[in-house]
Image (cartoon, rainbow, N blue to C red; front, side, top):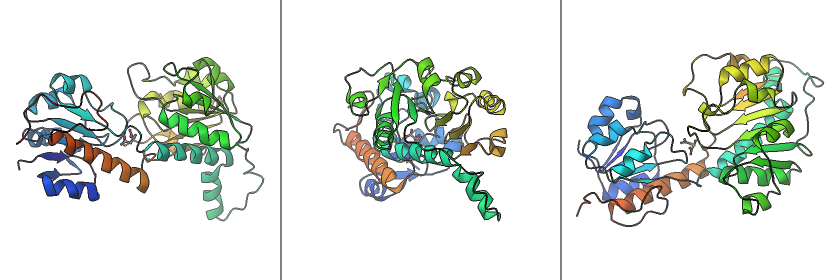
Length: 326
Ligand code: MLT
């Protein structure tokens, strides 16, 4: 079927229905799993809307001669070959802020859950236990949160942590000391090593790039306090999971919460058997409110590009030199 807009992951809601009133939309939530079929279906499409599972490679782009715009329903751009899209004159739009609050709130939830061992206490109690002393936890107030990355999500997390009475330190080489993210969270900007050494909770909020891939391995966990917790709600490939397991086995850190994994969905992993680890299936951005904002923003921007108007959240450029429909 020839379509204007191809949607390759589960993206639904009123904004998608509104797109259908103006354009031919082909939505197949499983298409991302089959790159060959995806390539064939994309050949005539003028817009592509994806989440993070569709790999928008240079090869895919090279075959999509009608494509004018790629809409990323989310913030991370690691699944899109931005260079290839830009070279082909394809506008890339994303939703950089729309789910940040949802992610920040899950980071806080993870900290509380780790501090009070909520997942283990819940399981024990449902199995008939009543182990009050075993589940003596720690308070967040007075503890130090180390934010690796002080972008929008790091900022919102820091602001909330601050309201809980936590001390906020941060490592972000792109942020200046007078930026609002620093002044409003009262964050102390520190080196990566200092952050590891001083934090009671280390929370990771950086994008996946060649520089950040694997930035947390056994060596980095060994530089943390043995009482500290590690959180990753950003990208799984930032962390070497074997290194994390070894650090936990040796008692180098107290526990971890991972919403994202080296491979998604993950295969069997020793992390699944651990009481000191909380695992969730990349749901940080998945709240009704956050997703409503994400879907509205990406659909609105894709429509804008197809109608020759400027999108709000373009990543490379606002207009395409490719032929637009009449
Ligand atoms: C994001 O990058 O916005 C979140 O990780 C959710 C997603 O990848 O779709």
